[in-house]
Length: 439
Image (cartoon, rainbow, N blue to C red):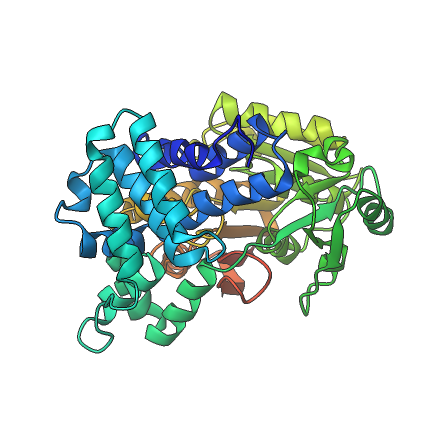
């Protein structure tokens, strides 16, 4: 490790931003890695591992700490709490780090950050946790099945209960285990600038390991690649020049399911940051058009920035509230793409903190908002056109239940295709797709 930068302290600062200040984990990590991009690859990997691992297993870390601390975790100072969390994670999940080093570095950090009076407490808890790992007991699988899964996979109990009721305990555990697996980085070529073969060759020249993605029945995914072996994505010239777009496989599948063709008119009603709009623009070609809409000036600016970077010529951007009808758009679209705001429970591998933020009440509110938007944007679909409804969540209330409600309310639509994807089924995240045809 470098003498100038303490990577453990950087990880601690990042955890505080998420757990104490409610900032979003994926944005915190991105900004951190950009700010300290001069760190060598090993340091960046160490920093990322501590930050992501501690967040992903936060409930388990709190459970372990509670076994060795007389002070309840929720009553601890935020800095001490996150310092213990990240240190216990190193003790239990990073075998290459000696126990003594974990304890000593935690004590040093406590003192450096003005908590010298608590350094003995930190030292005592961590040394007890290190010695007691073999004797540590977890909730009983038979007597406390929900608590057992909640602690083992660090997911709030209400999510375990909801998924177990909807999909069964075995499927729920499979999904939960996949959320703790390594996340593949998937990209697709920007066909306005390059072809898949040329992109693969250039990435190889830049030292990136490239593997094609395959998914039965989805031929365009042969254009997609999984990337590994690189240090910093934004450090790749091909990324900065817009040769490819980072996009989850499930998002690509949603676009392909829509079935657009050259010359089609598309309205993407909640488009930020614009990845699906860009892919749709490639599919409809120069003779087609895509209108990418979103609610806030910030999101619209983000879409416009990506369009400019990727050189798409057939996309326009509009700031518009999807709950408000735009009269001029009625029955003008061959496809209305409605990837709507949701609870995000399908993307817990990449946005780990979502599971700690969302509540049952919020999922109900989001389901209501989704219905409100669908009841408006369905007016934009031409006769014989398509409404593609998608979310990045795993929640019947926001997905299948909304589709059933929509079909009951609007008999001019019929369901052509519906799929709930779980993480691990493909290289992608959990995602829901429903393709609806207007007669």
